[in-house]
Length: 419
Image (cartoon, rainbow, N blue to C red; front, side, top):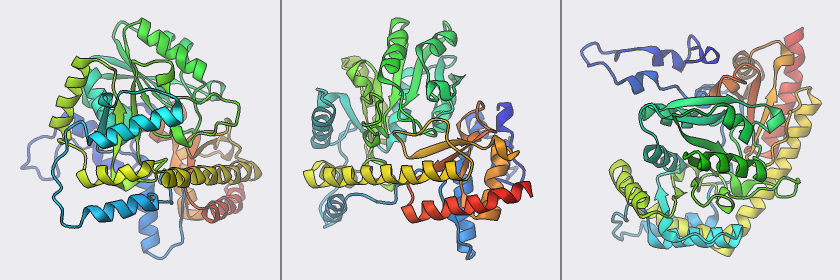
């Protein structure tokens, strides 16, 4: 545990430090179970839900969960699945029709020709990352990850007894890795580089030429490239930053993606990965998927075919435009109350802003914002040590009304800190 990740007393995290089950008659838990870190966004979300249940009006801007839900055609397709028909297992790699539909999506939206056999359907984007980590990481292997970044990636590497090499980033690099940073943190034990673009928590994309440079370095030095593109299709293509899939420059990268964000299907738990075109690698992924979860949920796979109809894609594009409008509300609102973002998000629906000027650390800021202003946010401690105490993530997946009210509450509350 880094210095920026100290357990907070009186929270759900304190239980994680226990080395034994509460019931002393039970054996000692595994080391990975004892050392796993909580996802603190969930801790604040749970506290917000408890306050709401007690009649307190809380604005929840802590979780990355779009308020749109699945497209109407997908919901209709799911209802049809429960008409009494048999719902058997699919192949571990997924429903063939869905794999083809995703390949068509890559061709039509991204201009990429992906063989459907390279696509594995997973139980959410998290399972895609699980497969990628299981495929590539052995005990003692080092995996380079940007700090800040999505916390669950670190836990996956730790679970397979790899070693996370956190590379501090800043606004100067859009909070992403670049070739120079990767080279400076490289060692003979480096096995993989993990990139999330657009990023959670910063919402920023990595410049395509920078991405190419990182992938070229890793490939030349014999390491895997694992790229999480969960938010790729939400990205703004009109801000001057070249936003493309890593597969446009590195066909040997492992790409993880999800139906959760662009298609609004968070609770449906469906994702996919694109695997390098190698028979041995594809066979290994098939075996790993079989052993880890057998197959993704059958009715959800069938329903997800409706994501790729013209009507559903048009609806998802309308929602993307709505998120851009919400982004403007947040960026302008944070600037108005004196907490401007250092790098404007152009991909994922998050704003990552520096709260150092308030005199509080990020954890205390979020605790007090929830208790006093009734606004739920996520402290930087979730995402790494570099910005653990200085930055806070706000999710603008909430409605325009909720965003405006939440920012107004924060604006009225901030002066009370100095008072």
